[in-house]
Figure 1 (cartoon, each protein chain N blue to C red):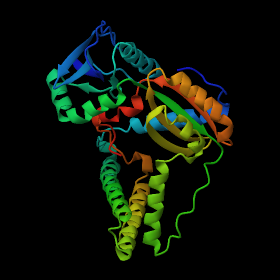
Figure 2: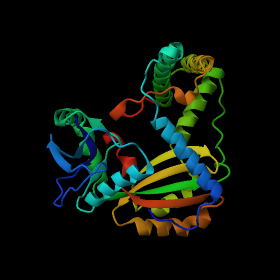
Figure 3: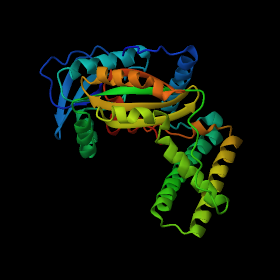
Figure 4: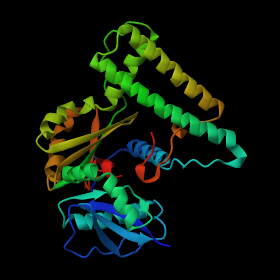
Length: 115
Length: 224
């Protein structure tokens, strides 16, 4: 790697470092390991991660159908409301167990992260 | 008991010595199912750190000077033995072969886009309907936006003949707005930098920084 002109500003370097740390935290998403001291939270994290995974799949499928013109106006509204409520529910339940959105992930080893 | 640490997939066996890996282990080549893997035998994967990441990069860069394609594998990838490696590679052989072909003869340049605010949003078509329709329209817009960096539009046509593929990641955490990875022909990095430098004025108020050339890490996701 070689530095290119013009040089980065300090605040830009700080911003890049923060982003790299965020990425490293995500990459270090722990494999699920039920801690006997905190089983409820561990189980909630696992279940909510899977629900969030399914929610994202459903959302992408809905957007594909929207773009493909295969959803009627009524269907679009119904699917949108369902996905919106599902997102709110996942967020509320996660907050109840003190989970941040970026904690809803699983490290699948060589396969990478689930989300 | 040692396990097999996977460094990269290669376009073929190197003519030079494979040398030693991050843990000072002797590296070896495993050819299986039409794929060639660079591996080392280690007890544990090296802990990720600036030092070990650089060391792994140096191992691969050295081989890249001898080979048409080096497809880096995710840092820390371990399998139990050569049989498990062959099975893992066989399961994904078509994707891996495709990824190797994609990066053959290429290197990666990385552009970062900086600014205090992202480019103004183009208003979405009047999102009629109820809250569900507006929600879905908003999510669609967010997905589209995650794949675009309109701040770089003045640069795109100038880079068009250099760039073979692109990967975009929006951050929108000012001042870091986006990272764009470009796959370019090996040896084209200096010209790439010249083109970016010449376009800086047209990009204002956004600034860009360039690093590279790198091994094609951002284009190896299928081998991760």
